Length: 249
Ligand code: PEP
Image (cartoon, rainbow, N blue to C red):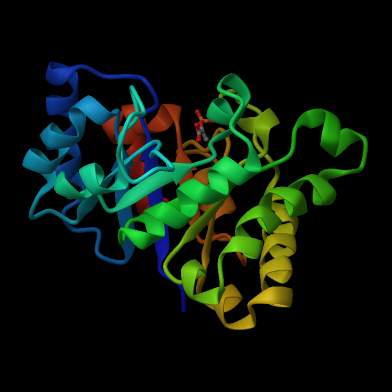
């Protein structure tokens, strides 16, 4: 039985005062939610703040990216070991906003996945098709290519504890959500693809859905078979919305 997981992706939003209010409200509002794993992935400078407020709560915190190198002359990068020093549990790798804007290749993303695992972080590996790929009938091919980059470097053991996020690019930040059936079909495809190479891991790996999840659609989406939770962008910036989604899960 896989536990549901709801992760907020704050993207490049927030400031010390706003974060303080949001984190305090979440820590208080979600304290009785024990059947769902909850995390917020905050911008790097706010990891310390998240650690201070969320330590000893049922909410974990995470980052939105990690360097593929251990350390060294990589200006502007942040290593997995540094994230560990701030108590980070989760790290998003391969979010489409990064792979588009910063031309992250599948190979780079696979390296980030592997180094995160090596340091005991839980990578949230994002896959998903563009609208053009869906409409031209190559959705499964596109997802399979992204997925295979980690399946080829990672034995079943590396998938242990990892999280896959299915995020159709056309649904991110658009208010256009995949229907529950579209999402379920993509999640089943991902699980079957993993099962073909790592049958044991396919049963345990959590596959969460991201793309315009909100309090109105969360219950239906997150109750579908094979959907193990959600990756939440905009609605994670509003404590009431995020709390409703966690409760729906
Ligand atoms: C995301 O950025 O991962 C995301 C799913 O965003 P939104 O919920 O705003 O669509």
